Image (cartoon, rainbow over all chains, first blue to last red; front, side, top):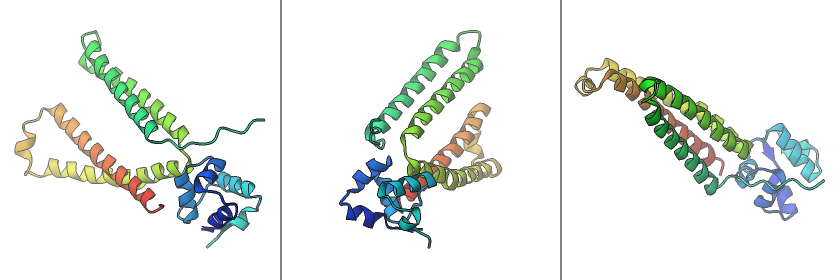
Length: 63
Length: 145
């Protein structure tokens, strides 16, 4: 699954560490998410969507 | 309502704390065994009691760690257990079978008491399992960097 996490983060000028802190995960997890090599759980996906005030399907794109 | 405390992934200090707690647990088990083996429990009873204490302690330490790590770290552990630990157990089992059925190690194994042979087999499987687990865990994170 692909996602727009890196773009959305860059638009807000947030660091990976800052985003990680906002979401309650580690920076390594943010990196794994951004590279598309780790798909988040549904609760984390909802948390990400809430943080960016976007629907989940606007952030995560199915292959 | 105040903001929740920012999340901080466990770092090297947390790792050292876990190792320290594990060492302390090992020390308690060792000293407890020495103390209890001279009681009515005997050697076997002391070993059983202290192994139970050790297991409860390890579960408590693992629970503490599990609550601290985030979902990706948990996924890495689960993945490593399945894809590293299980094959490791299989490979270790094959190694033990080779030791038992082959005659190439008979002279070496003849030097062990039966209980030491059991411990050797279990220990060997465990070491290979942990090795497989560690390699799988490293692989999981390496491809996600």
